[in-house]
Length: 359
Image (cartoon, rainbow, N blue to C red; front, top):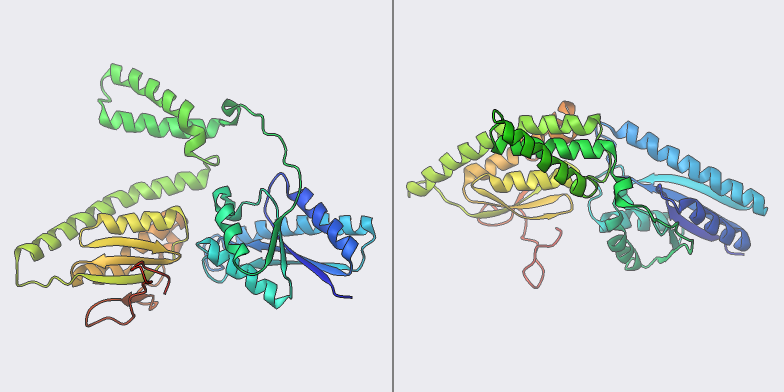
């Protein structure tokens, strides 16, 4: 008799326990079989806090395994094996396709053709990620379905979801910004600043932050403050160089498209890096695709500075700390490519409509 096999991605949610029960009941009826509990990692093994992330993932997998084994034992299904695995720690996973690639590879290695999703599963902690993730899975050839479990009612007033930490953080930022624009020596600006900060905090603290700020959040903010004058200096220096090139016809202008594979992580870190590059005259981020940034450079000096990776190091410093900034540059890692001109070492990756696609 052929074994029934299921893969269930693991993540914390209010319906995950019910999802485990549903899948184990199915496998108990179809025994023998295998239940594969997999955790899709949003970090790499060489990240500064990888040990902490892995420990949390293993805790979640252990809890899920305990639930599954208890359900199977209660059903008398002793011939259903439970396997656990952490996937994707060798390289950063950026888009839904990267996560799906990890699942399909694992499924092929273990001869599994069915994935059962918790209806509130949030890959990388982002519920907005689930719909494109499910779409990519459906295109992968695997059988994909959501567990038919009941979701708990969420009749909670928004004001009850506003925590003190989020409120204080948003109020502090709004008040500080108001005082920068106003006069901190004038009592009326203090009164209106407090009023404005309260209004912003009441209306936006739940929307602006998806979790309570922590000591790590504060450290990132402080490192970001350190980065601001550095970025201003880069912008100033680039302005001077680009202006000199424009005003001196004898100096080279070489508009060139480049590609750079960056190691900063997904979401806000790569957005910060892409925007920093765009703010620096002479470079323009055209597209961010997975871990690749496609950047248009105006002059050779800008391209060389881009490949030296100063902005990448500073981005790693902001989000991961000083130790993470001590990394090889994209040029040293051979993670760069010139896509146009005589020095091109990689073809421009475009589709039939001229859109940049993954190389």
